[in-house]
Length: 334
Ligand code: PBG
Image (cartoon, rainbow, N blue to C red):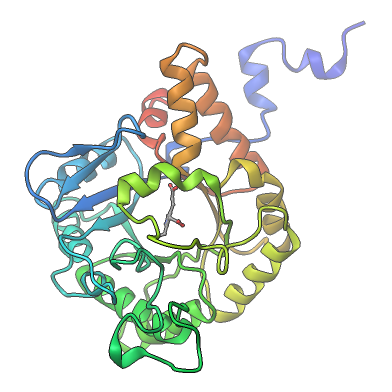
């Protein structure tokens, strides 16, 4: 006797016919790092295949990405100089704003998503301004070094507007500050950008898997960590609560980050918000892990990557933000 399910797997055609999950290039978003430094692209050693692109060359990489059929990039910036208030992040000629203009000029149809955060722009490396780090922001009743939530949210609004002015199609706030989505929404609307959607990093965990990103974007906190505003890996219900706040504040798309240790959170978010697009961020450490094992010959990279991306889709993500996007596009035969 042949099991019914096995009969359906007998040929590739039958397997294709009953496949429950699809993985297409159209589901992928490729992260890009733009640097204010000039010269040659700088390879990120802990992320083989990933580089920091000088602003005058980043459009070339964006073009390559688009030619592979990848519909969107997520843009991060490495500024020439950092300061306590992360001012390059919202300057009209800040590194990301210049990169967005260059990319939109070269590949107008490529969707440009911009990361809205301060951590790559502040000299202390935190995602907002700190009490006492700038004289006029000092609030004597709060401890020194305390992350000033509302002042930081105001700056995130300025970042989003500066990015939209440069041509960003979608803004993606990643700071996990209270009221962040509402603050950015009202800043965008007030500046005439009510058509620009917000992709909120709605469930962002305090994760060990961001390590290589710190090298890529140069954004490690000098002191302390982000556990006051990123979530405990042990919590799943809290992720739904965080997403609920972002939905109420006007988030157009949701995100779970990282992806692999949180597939259950992706599934739960998908079920709780069936009407909203959901992205999952397959982060730097998840990428580095696969690349390191593949380099040793311990994993079949293509097979492992496609299995990982399919698994993230199966868990319920519509979109996968992944450093594997270019390789996956080739393997998927776009
Ligand atoms: C914050 C931000 C981080 C990542 C994306 N946006 C760093 C952090 O949260 O500490 C990490 C992404 C990755 O590891 O690939 N701007």
